[in-house]
Image (cartoon, rainbow, N blue to C red):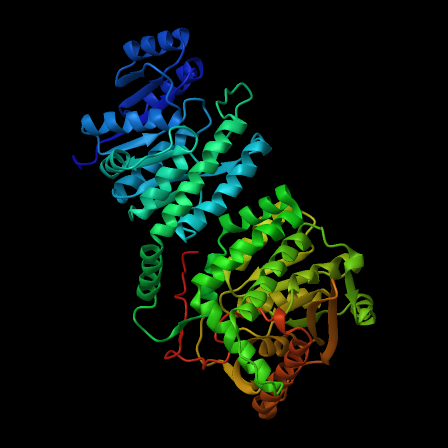
Length: 576
């Protein structure tokens, strides 16, 4: 038994005594000591708390004469836990919002990570008030700015377990908000002090008979002042935070000159981030989202040399190919990354059904009708030029066409799962395949045989294997293109089309062009034909890229040789 690990529960109570009566009985079964902080409750509630403390074993009542606010009560509770010799204090609300069944798993997580704050990442049901969600998402944004990091997934959930000593040192040395601003501020300042923070999902409800002490005007004003303090605090710590970010990145790259593979870089698109974007879009709407986009893009451009370098490299190659001598400044890079942000908004809008048919132009509608009426399947080869998500509009236009998008990165599957929850009418089926094995090939063959369409991109190299590429000239320089999409199309032995989707003059233009009746080649000519096919794809990709260069969304070294000396590939995780 670890005698140094000695946790307690910490519950601030302000006129919640009756609700707390049922909560404390559930807590008692956990066998943990409970510090209850009576935050200046009225006489009736104070009497009930006194009675509970006398009747229930292991309840330690701390009474504050005047109401201090939630933060003030937790602060006093942490001080009390420190002087009582507890190693960890688990903050839990008294009103029944939190899922007490998760306490044991949080405690075990804390035992495994004793130096970390174990913080709840709330999973809400329909009971959550809209008025609580909006400031929450605004706070998320400002916390990311104040930490220059996405590490803090949620800073407002009061279901969390503190290591007592670092929390005590912080509250004794720095000013912290005393009310609803406390939870966020202590987490940001703990991050500044390099206290590890671990997040675990937990269910949060808003009971119908719940009593909320959140004052819409006063508490939002306190939160605004808190973010002002933290923002200027971030500016004072800017060199330290940037240094920390830089050295963390250096350690991840293991002191090698090789760059991370594109599939590793896309891991920033975690599920919680996708949910945040979808919910922010729903709450604030597209126009407000565009306003939020500017500070977000500014942050990424300023703090991501990789993004700046990839954009600069693309524009240098593009202008050289056009015979234009132009210096690539920060404005060009900013516009490039901003276009990517706008495409992300349109992607969400498209999956939520907010991009209407009159905003989409099919340049080759007759080909779509031909495929739909033929009853034969097909392969569409797309790219990360423009916005391929609008391909779902094909399914809406010709309902008999079923679309299957093959992705080789598990995070794309997570993205799809969130959007499926947001809109059950999504007409695109995502097939995730880390490797193109026999099982995946058989599944896709069944889809094509049933007259369905399989979409695969042709401008990303393999997520798992080095060297399965052909080099073709793109914007004047040789770049690696994966063989996989064309080998797959050959195995499926069906018509192949190229599809590009570009936003032009405020509308999305879907370009669909016939590429081949089949890519199944005779064995003795296969190598030569495969090389020619990839060169043809690169030529068409180049053609459409010249139409809309700002919609080139491959933010990595696209022209880099595909070998272990230049690229760090992800390790395959067989447990997922």
